[in-house]
Amino acid sequence: MNTILIVDDEYLIADILGFALEDEGYLVEKAGNGAKALEALKAKRVDLVITDYMMPVKNGEELAQAIRNELQLPDLPVILMSGAQASRGHVCPGLFAAVFDKPFDMDKVVDKVRELLGT
Image (cartoon, rainbow, N blue to C red; front, side):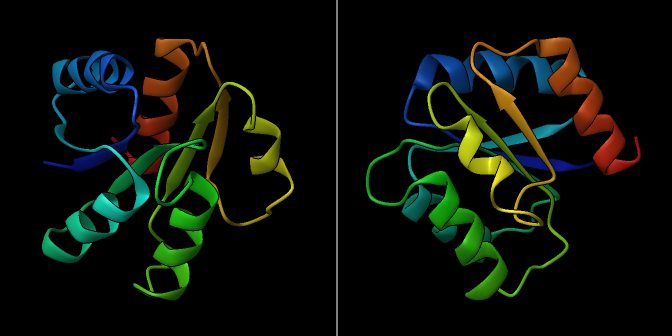
């Protein structure tokens, strides 16, 4: 069973997305900011990360860079979801496997997760 880490300081969004992914059969972990996400990634194997951009402590771009450089996980798919800064994901080629604007279409996000995880 695949594990997905959702990183968002807006807990309602993380919960809604988490419930939808759990309904699809995925295990879901959550973190409220990029620093907590890095701690979780060091402690547990995760198959995909979905992150917001604007968060306290470490934003989504900094998190993705830390995943690639500090944790040396170049193949871990990272999806960026953001309201105002989604465009930042498009200027960082190779950093994000997909970029979604908030509000996002849940079906499209779930389809992208399935595609990235081959499920």
